[in-house]
Image 1 (tube, rainbow, N blue to C red):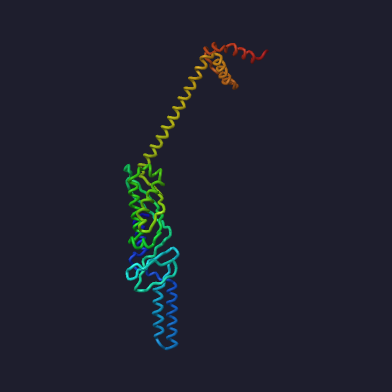
Image 2: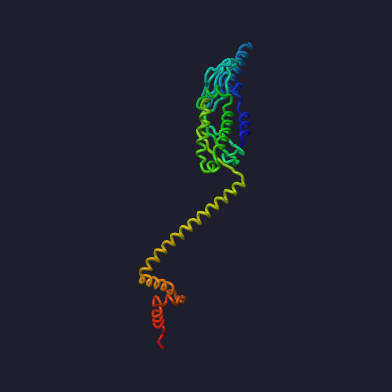
Length: 305
């Protein structure tokens, strides 16, 4: 939901602060009906219209003077246009015509959705960012007297701060560290709204959208980086293996017996499986004396007729 849609909805549901709140209470309506009925009954009994007129006047007065504010609400009373104090929660009275009420202030924690579309980051990448702002009114008097429409002011301030914060960060910072961006926005908004009696508790970055072409490029870049790391690891493994082989060659060079035993072990590992065939170089046969050993093994395995 965009900021414009939210502002239109807010303006349609809430009154302007300088307009009188005409929300009537159920207690006032009930007492108005009772006074009117009692006056009419007295007029009928006495045959005099004055009790009925008095009952109607009393009912109208109670209808417009008695108001109710819910547990989480506060409302300011303006007497001849001058601030006379806060009322609520609960039942309170006002003087019709002389007093008028501001809009009712909801002091619960409220949630606002803010979006910034096609905003450039510090490295000139257009992004669409959606954020959620949690705020509440902690001083109803300031919120009524210091700002004309605090709901709209918070929404516009949040959108402006979000765009400014996006411009100060690079794309990888926004994608990888959303909490830092949210804390920065919360601090900026809280400093701005505190003089209005409003505190911003937290800001959460819900989504960061980037263009599709850039997503493909970033995916290819990540894949190439993983491939490079795999090749580096393979090269390191080859280097370590070569060092181990060089060390083993030095050991075998200075110890022919160890070389002979190693060669015999390798040959045994190759021919221990039945039906296997091993091709051994003639130089290895002469060096290790394998000819006699293989001949003896063949004779031992032959059957005597």
